Length: 442
Image (tube, rainbow, N blue to C red; front, side):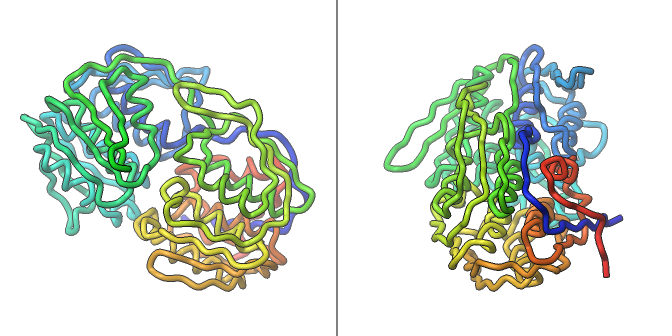
């Protein structure tokens, strides 16, 4: 059943908090732990629906996955090529990352698996991973347009490939690299635009033979297959995509100051930080440190008067998940903000660009858009609208943040799917001082 939720104009936000563990790193930690020899220990794992589905998927493929009472997760891997055919279809729920990366992980193993997901995931394109994985010897049988549910028959004699990404996609890059772990020789991915590099960093941490080089302005990532990975211990840093909601909330709510501890600062994920600073955000980073090959730090945010900016298309891959909340920030910024390079938003949990436009317009914000761009005229936000979320967790959270500083409350038609990435989001925001209520549903 839908769970309507509304956010009301709120007084100042304050406090110090930790956001949930990074979702991208959590997925990858479970997957590589399932493939490694020995016991991988993971602390700070994001215990949200998307990640729990990945844990279940790894168990279905033969790994032993346990959660201990202290909150840590322990994965006993099966070794390269050691996965087995699951007894039942593997359900990834709402997670495109889980489905696409797992498809790569098992595509070069001689097994058969049925992959499926919820109604939203079944609408999302899988052809972008099917094409390279079929070149490596896997076979896919599924719905029209290469969508879930899919039956994957892994390659008995996998073939390494050199694959140039036609679109900037960390998921496609990762799927091919993970497939290369069980293929003979070297599998290489060439990306013309740098995307988030968690897979490359984590593969090194697990002892994979991987080389990254820049040649003629393009990144070449090469992994040598048929090598065993070694289990390790990982601490998952705070998710910058989740931190973004509280950050923007503090910026647009008067007299606010918050600190978010232990946030991932990977350079391929900090596009929003750079953009908010250009808009005039009062944002500082303290206690920079490193954990598991990743940079992290504590982010202090104070309310500020924002101004409109031009967000270049080249920055889109480093903040692709943050455009909904950036659109909210732009709504309160003086002047016009233009964002470009947004074509990837069309194939997220929803047509995320269309969902952003709908949410802005129903709350009185003037905007213009094209296939891959949007312009937002900021300033005063009337609010008072009911936002259609289209089963998209980031749309729901973003427009709830809008309601904290709009003239009138903002309601979302369904907040249930927020649990896929940020299970206690309402309680988290309320602890900082946000006023959230059950939906008004007029």
